[in-house]
Length: 93
Image (cartoon, rainbow, N blue to C red; front, side, top):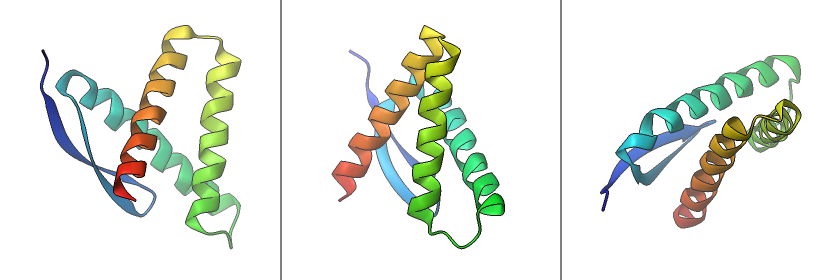
């Protein structure tokens, strides 16, 4: 059985500690980089919003991207990453 490793992730301006399989860490970090880069992009385009608004915009963008590409591998990666982040956020609350 594979061991879960703890990693710290940052989404927007918040840090979360999650556990993941070592083999998934790189994929999670790539996904987070994309998300955080898109947050910065939306912040420059839509001033005056709060971080929750930017995160919501990015999640809609990311989910739409996965659906329009019709790439099952990308869709699974995105779905898995979002599920892991959702679980980590739920545990942090």
